[in-house]
Length: 175
Image 1: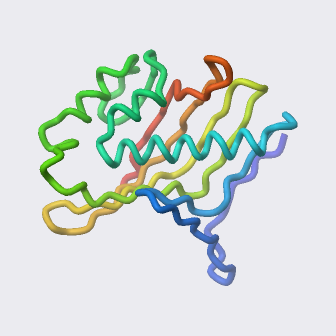
Image 2: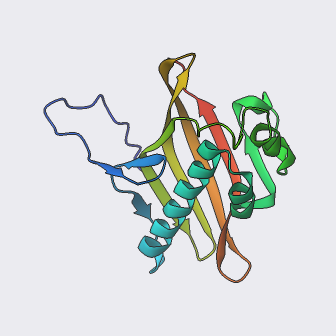
């Protein structure tokens, strides 16, 4: 097995196109799918669309949509968990129900999530792993801020063929 370590980007090559969506996220470049399963391109596209819908729900403070896309026993490693493995949705619900989140009397927050260079690996008929760098653009104290995080999300096909989000690992990338 050969390990490929990418070098710095070649400035003479054109940048990958950014695929725009009418929602609050973009996908930088087409997803790369990896699998021997015959339906993997279709499964990869379906999982990537669900992942985008999940990011839209997070950006919009829409806990109902988020909860329908996630398994009740969702596990995660993320900075807010300060090194602990978290299981269940209560930890996440806290952030959705904070006083500033989802307030219908206020206009929606100006947030844009971009999945940069997403990679989808379909494993058999019932598992998919989505890896990407998530760029979150938002306003903080009147100034634009971009936060970068490396994310890996695991989706499992359950309940009669429905993809459900079962695990996330998110690491912030220091500036």
